[in-house]
Image: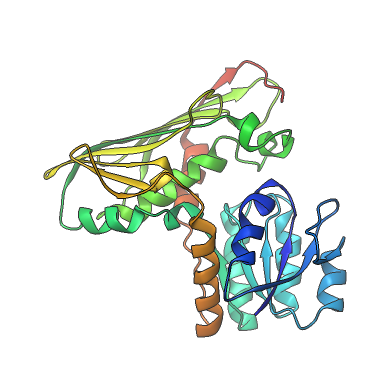
Length: 303
């Protein structure tokens, strides 16, 4: 099947393009970007031009930042094409609800992706937790924004989500593996004096679960989730790619490169089955954090 990739930035080049190149399901037939290109692939600077020129392309994957994404997403759906959204699926819950309704009315597939749910050890952790009681849990998601989002000022603008851009990955895993749903009870956000979105966040959730997100980590990066259960401790490390039970590695390996191939395989199944997958629970937790949070002014931040 032919697919177009919109937004040729770091995440597209690092993850989407290699995943599509290796996919038996997809042919990357066009790109849309103001600046980026993929060698050997027809490039457009306007999504409307691409949709009009390449009417045989049935699916579009959007890798744009969340704030400008809505207009592009609506254009794709109005043109009757299937749509795949990079996380987070939008700047607000309301606009994603509108896209879901629009896709249903058009009879096309919509996939709001959560790539961390495709990490190698997530399914095994979910299976192990079935029927078990979690007494407490701790999420530590700390990374260097300069490494993963170099010069990307949009991430600290209103709607850019700040540290929740990676933090929502942890929440997507959490809401996938837990045997019972959770909700937010309190949040603290550290917002740089010269920015609009938080650089760090601390969350408290039901079930004795806490989360520590920070964009200022240097050196080794930390993407860990640790739980104490009635059957002993369990942990997910490396962003859900390594499972530890009682401190012993039980599954997975130290690589994140399987996540996006799994997303595109899932998208192919959705298109072939004429179905959609729009789970917004991780985004609800982030919205609740912004609603409930106590805010602290942090030092100004510059890339």
